[in-house]
Image (tube, rainbow, N blue to C red; front, side):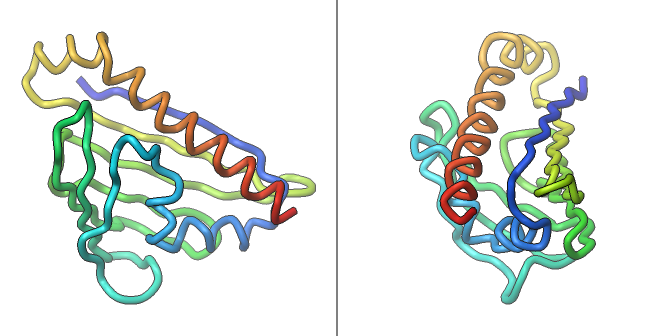
Amino acid sequence: MIHIFEQKQHVPSPRESLFAFFADAQNLERITPPQLRFEILRRDPGEVHQGMHIEYRLRLFGIPFGWKTLIESYEQNVSFVDLQLKGPYKLWRHTHTFEDDGAGTLMRDRVEYELPLGPLGYIAHALFVRRQIQQIFAFRRTFIDELFKKLG
């Protein structure tokens, strides 16, 4: 079963600045909760672009995972999509979009994800995975609010 997580956030910063922050793969470590121990292992050189691969390691529920991502699509200052090629999910596709919104930017996240293990994955989602994803994005939201208020 495919699940959808969506979040939108107004950031009082120009779209180009916010997009540039997210297009820098090194910032993934900054916007990920510390308990996940996120670490980039390898990435294609240069800025994020369509076709780029990023490999990293993190811990989910204390269990270490390798994760490999493909930047499936990329439109400068507008959107990009990262697709999990290898990792703990059967499917993970994260769409990031950025649009001008008055005195700032409206940023949207849409994650389509599916867990492995059929019925066991469905139970795990109900018991803790959904909440874990919400907590990860709540951390990200707070981090972005605080960072871009300072940069103002």
